[in-house]
Length: 255
Image (tube, rainbow, N blue to C red; front, top):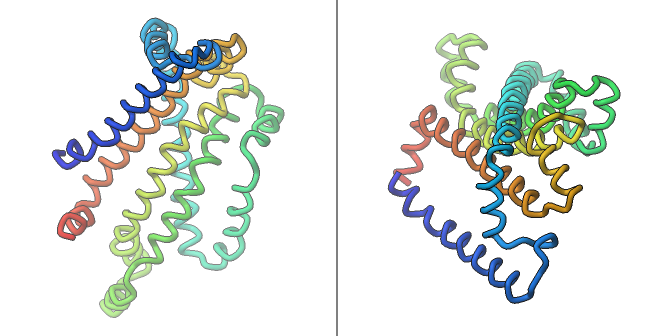
């Protein structure tokens, strides 16, 4: 914890310096607030408008967590199937890569046409964003299992199930958590994009309304909220990794 605090002051100092430069630049250049508001105006709007904004924030958090959970489950299940069934991996893995080449912003209107304006198309968007990093990371983790340990367990009479649950899965956890960190931050972005499909509440809705009314300060409030949410989700996954993968943390400390 002390190491985190000692290292954390540097980015905090850089961020504070950036805000100071931003404030002075807007003031000296006399940039209109509707074009680029100073940080003080943005923070004031965030505090003054919290009563209405927190409902949008709560909606986005709920949607992000639900979509992230579904994406994690599908991504991990896909990785396990592709790992245990090589013929399936050879057939489907290229299609998974192709699926990531379709822009979500282009696919979103089609999801509305197919599934309506309910929560389903929004969850589909977040799942598409989240599952691929988890699948790739888990597959890489499975492949990193030392061959000598596999050979030793097979010589000891371990079945394929025992080999997977007691060796391959534990060794894949560091890589899996790397994918979870990426997906956790992507889930917030996916939730905001999905809210552009016609949601009644959410940061995406708040941002759209603010942009259409030229309330640039509110747009920046939404942007800062998205950044904070992404950092919180990332920190939660990082904490879970340190609790569950203690052996890896001890190795990194020794190094």
